[in-house]
Image (cartoon, rainbow, N blue to C red; front, side, top):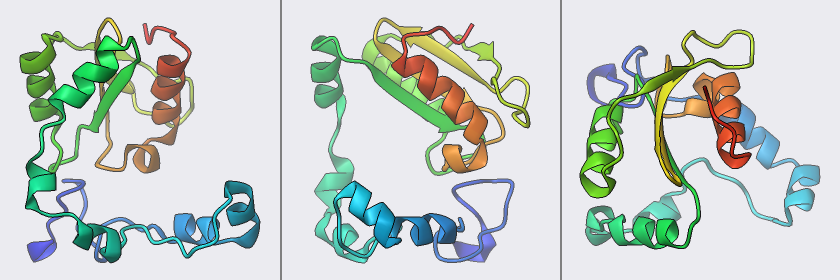
Length: 165
C-alpha cells in the first residue's frame, strides 16, 4: 500500500505486505496436528504468489453474475458481506451491484451480536429470498479477524435459517 494507506481498513495504517498480521493463523495452519486433521501436507501461505501468478487479467474481469444466479436458481443460499471500513471492497458498491443484478433492497436493518465486545449495532442486513447481504460495523476487509463475534452471529444465523432481527 502506498504512503501507508491501508486499502483493507481505512482506520489503520498499513503494516507489512498485506496490512494484516496473519502470523497466528499461519502458525496454526502449519501445525502438524492441524494439517493432519485437515488432510493436507503443505506449507500454508496467507497469499500464495504461485496462485496469484496463475490468475490473469481476464480472471479479474470475469462477472460472477451467471454463477450466482445458477446457485440462487438451485435454491441454495448466497451470502455477501463487507466491513464498513473496507476501502478495496466497499459495501456501498457491493450493495448497489446486488440491487442492480437481483433487485435486493438497499434498505438495511440493524442487528446486534450475541457476543460481548461487538459494536452496537453489530451491523446491518438485507435479504431477498435466499440472497443475503450484511454490512459489518467497525470491520475492514477481514471481517472475522476484526469482529469475530459479529461474524459468528451472522454466519450462524445465515446457515441456520434464523433471522437477525
